[in-house]
Image 1: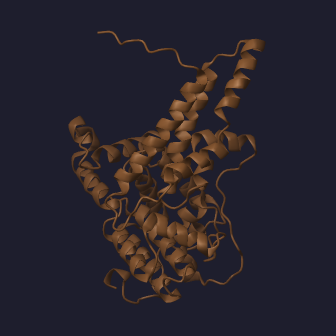
Image 2: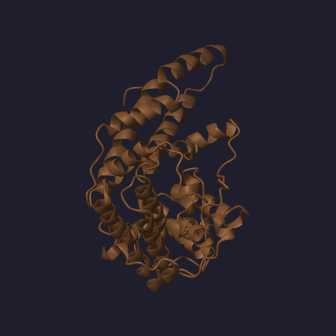
Image 3: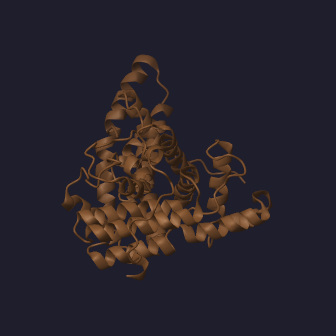
Length: 357
């Protein structure tokens, strides 16, 4: 049986269709993935927001076509060039939605494959560790904040300060839109969900099965089971091994670090918004640190869990690649809080857990 040929499409039409398909796919993916998060509501006007972001970050399709036509007349440029631009737009939109899901819409623009090439042309040096050098936090407080360091680096924030470059109203909007957090009660509800379930619970079940049976013995049918995270976990595990993001035999037993990193940052944001007081913020971070110590023995192990967790979150190796770059920076750079703070330390904050609040 032969496929019916479709009518020829112009490069502009091809690029536009790819862009529109990307937005539609990303919106459907968001709704499907966040439907089980307590209190989550799809932010109004999200599709319009994404299209606006894309319009500001991607060249106009009509302009691209006009330029191509001129080049075709002058030098016979292949129309596939414009089609490729459309494919980059699609990857760009999907990545932007993924980054928006953890409250970092905007930063994702520089981490997608398409934008990374553009940023490189403008001299972007990649991930950096920023410090305030104010000296206001003591050693144990810096250590607790370090459990959220991957997200601080990702958001281009200071790793040694509670302050945020964003104004409080912007942070409040982020917490409300993406976590439905508006006060102390909703803060503790989401913290509890991240600690007890989050994105790690289902993934850890699949991990336990893989460690028990070995990944090569997981059938294709099991990988395709949409009721489990087996397929995503297998994909990310294989990508980590193939790309050298994790030494063989040192694959994590849990991806809970992905949720713990977000707990630390959620607690900090809630404090800045006045939803919890300072003691409660440190308690939230302490609980995250305590749980990390139950699962891991070093920043290296914690980092590998974060790498896998971020990838399993969407089942996208590119997310693990981004996490790997950040984790490597934190493990190797002398300015890193992971180089300056011990993974294990005396516990100074022993107030009741937010899970019991």
